[in-house]
Image (tube, rainbow, N blue to C red; front, side, top):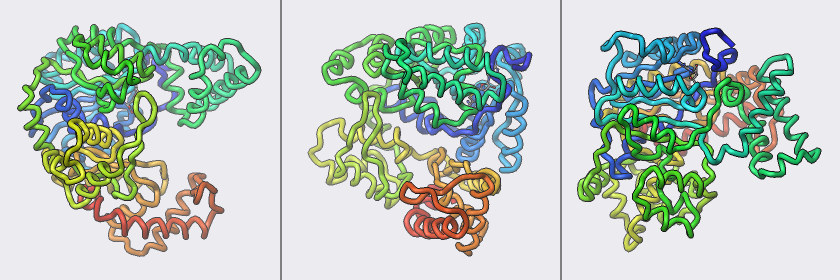
Amino acid sequence: MAAWSGGYFTDVQYTSNFYPQLAPGSMAFACLRQGVRPPALGAGSTFLELGCGQGFGLNLLAAANPGLQFLGVDFHPGQIANATQLAQAAGLANVAFEDLSFEQMLALPEGRLPRCEIIALHGVYSWVSPENRGVIVRILDRLLKPGGMAYVSYNCMPGWAPLIPLRRFLLEYVARTPGDPQVVVLEALRAALQMIEDGGRFFETAPTIKPAIERALKQDPSYLVHEHLNAHFNPLFHADVAREMEGARLSFAASANVADDLPSLAAPAPLERRISATQDGTWKQTLLDYAGAKLFRRDIFVRGLNRLSGPERAARLAETRFALLTSPDQLITEFIIPIGRMKGDPKVYGAIAHALAGGPKSYAELAGLPALAGAAEGVLIKAVSLLVGAHQIHPLAEDAATEPALAFNRAVLARLDHDPSTGHLASALTGAGVRLEFPELLAVRGELEGETNTAMTARHGAEALARAGVRLAKDGQPLAEGPAVAAELKARIAAFRKAKLPLYRQLGVV
Ligand SMILES: C[S@@+](CC[C@H](N)C(=O)[O-])C[C@H]1O[C@@H](n2cnc3c(N)ncnc32)[C@H](O)[C@@H]1O
């Protein structure tokens, strides 16, 4: 671990990710849905990410929201160098990155860093020391403007309670085993699994441990080392985080996981009424966390909680416009919710998707769909919230200039030959990202580069997969390398062009 790391695991760089919940439009919708006024965002508004990692997500947001300014800060110079290189390759003029620790940020003279409408920290707050959490709160206090939103995600209690000894087991195992931590962490997980199979009594006390190990074994090892091997690892109770945020005069506004705020989705029926009737916000969140055995929270706090009146909320919601992110026949209508899974009525969800397939529509227009006539109050808001949460639809961005998003997508796709794991591209229409599969990315690159020879695109794609050692599967079976892979890619590219390309053009992805 580097001397400057303060116990943070810096030997392996973090993965490149985009989290749709960080998109400004998604956060604003979450606040609005909860009746809280989001900040007005426009030219010159600033979005700061603390602990931005590789900066992939922040670069994507900058490309998709050219009217806003973005600043990413992280103390890992290797990651900041990568983030800056991607910004340069994409020609983004509205994003900057700085390799500063949180302590160094605080030591800068007043005015050196901008005051912001949005400050986000994802995957940071429960992985740093309590002292560093205090530093983060002081940064929020100094840099978040009145009315601004702070996104703070963290591993939380009580869901983590049975897993804390598992994490300790991994830490002790890794400390005793020489070798690449990314390999050893997997070995440690297998050793824990073996303990269960051999009858280790502790593991019998918590049925969530085995599935957690099985899930972890499928994850990227560079994610796992950051999740488990930091010196600081403090799953937090929401009540404690809310109290800490008071230090920056912040109040809890909404969950960035939009389904988490609907008690009907977040609590078993017998608890739902009691939780809904609770007026104390922190207590309500606490009850929801116990009801759903929550492991991870994505909280949105605001600096100055201003409640919208009922009519104002309704009017703002009515004019919010949404775009479809997938083709109607691939729409997800079964959702993962805090207490399990939920099937949406295909009539309602299908009608929304088909209406949006014709172009963006406002909430008021969706409310007027014949399929919703006579539907109980709350059906549409629930459907729209679930569809936003499952990344099937997204609110529109204020400024939909497409060129920066296209330039970003070209820069990302230029790396596809070396890194087929790339997954997200920028969408100018929504100010957010969309996830595409490898053949779809090949098709988009072909379009952006004017490459019309599908057979050649597929052959290059097959070569890139072979170089990266990635096996393409068909009907659950990995394909033999070479011509079979190229033929499958060619078929999927053609299918994408027919079914989805017009939609991605509309979204400003291509
Ligand atoms: C789990 S990663 C999350 C990265 C990014 N937010 C994401 O979700 O992809 C946490 C990041 O916080 C950074 N970090 C940890 N402690 C820090 C500190 N004291 N000052 C600045 N950055 C820090 C790490 O370098 C790392 O990139």
